[in-house]
Image 1 (cartoon, rainbow, N blue to C red):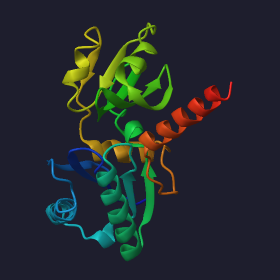
Image 2: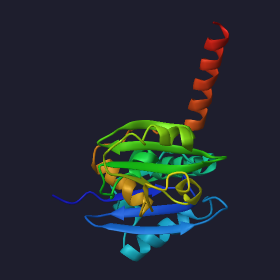
Image 3: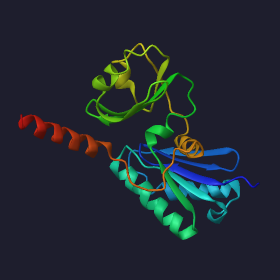
Length: 216
């Protein structure tokens, strides 16, 4: 049986990451603080050219849906929808926290993203599972301190949070788009391409709690 050829990208952070899978993982990444609108398509063209493929050779497209940069999420989503329609590709999305949990050996893997002002996007996978979270790192950390299992935090630019959790290990996530493909191959993808904006969900939850408390 012919190996499924998969094109994947993740644009939700400062890293614009792309991967092509044809039985092996071929990773291409660039870093920018100016968004990825002008970077993603040239990166994809370079990857396809270097590997001798055209977009028509791909079977499936998978992208990271967030959480992360609102602009980055929208760039990834609009690009994916355009490519999928134009080339007739099956298209799927994965949670970008979930995709960052692959490739790390520990009882509990905790992907983190800096959400600014001391806040994080985070989740936990493995022996202990915690649903995607947006809020203060100190609050998130408290729920993990009681765990006896080996635990590792995974993410980019986490120096500010290392100081608050000196007893834990912190590791870089590795190629981000490769994790997107690994999540897809692991059955963790969804057909519904809905951006994941945890900040909006958390704001709504807090407003509901405030309204409920004011009614007591």
